[in-house]
Image (cartoon, rainbow, N blue to C red):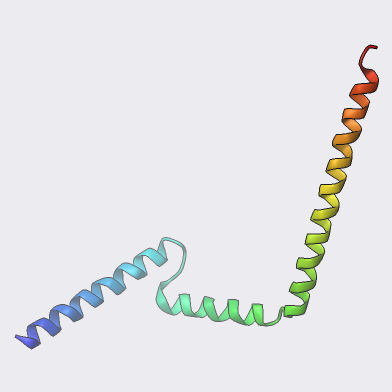
Length: 89
């Protein structure tokens, strides 16, 4: 009985791995080996990006966002001022 159960479990695992491979293929990945190769490539590529550079870029993006928000507020205020000056008195 244990042998039959082990065979069924092995077959279920095999079917599952085939299903995973099919799903990966739907996204252009040729199986688990290809997935692991892509993972390694991404890890190596990201390893070449310095964390300090990412921190700097993130801070700069935050500063730019803040500056653009302020410019947006100023433009909205200018638009309101223009409308009030153009309104008939």
